[in-house]
Image (cartoon, rainbow, N blue to C red; front, side):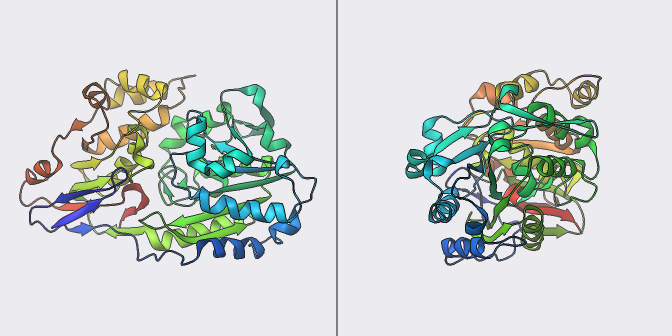
Length: 418
């Protein structure tokens, strides 16, 4: 039996050597929209809980459009032109419209990456800015929500009309992506992200994929979005081929809720008992562009693997391990328990410790094996997982009698125990 896993830009076919997996996790048959541009246009005219976008903006408005960075497969080249057509038809001049990249704690994009993200036409006509969560001078303080300081991008806050875009998928700590997450952590300040990604929040049993009830990450993101303001939301859902399956626009809470419910019906798949071995992916390009993002696939697989079992994950890692802070944390990772003790210590926080904390969850649950062609030997060892040089040979070595599950689309499938 051969199965194609999402891997890099082309995918990777694995051979199960005649063994039938107990479970092949899959999305429901989500047909792509036959005319996605027409659907976006129609939804902008008939949004949920709002008047048509064209009637909400004024000609003199300074308009900010927030987009995700290049680690997310958001089809910006389809979504943005339709939004911009409406704004221009409403009389808003190009100079009054700017696009803000929600980098969160990720690195800024250079000109080449920006053109790849939004298209050369849009990049040439409209101002596109990177959000920098570490630069307080570029942020506005909005007060507090519990123990969290609320900081937001100043350009966004000072805009007359704010549009947030993105796509909805299961998210391993916030429940679902999209909606309020475009604001926090997307364009939030570092002081806010420190709480959103704090050890305490991530340790919550509610901060898991597919759940927003009592989820502290979701609650904080909502609080920031409410304070900062979101005038209009445009979110989409995607199928396993990254094609648009649904468009949800209008009121940021109502549209996101409808999108989450739609997403849940299509991406959730279950198994009755935990399995011995899970073979999975990091979601393919652009999500699997580094090991930092690969952690999401490991966490997703850990939901359905037996304690002490194996997770075999494939990831392109074309951009390497990840950022400087993530690398340094991996270098200092002597043991999972020692790391947890450190991050729960008083006044300790590193920018990307949360991703290592999630990695540690996977390492404590199962033996993790990684197949990648994008990392050098030194970086492979830095990842603290077992390296697989030949994926099919590794699969052939799985002892007979072991139960096997396969998750071709990695973290894009919401895997749960029934």
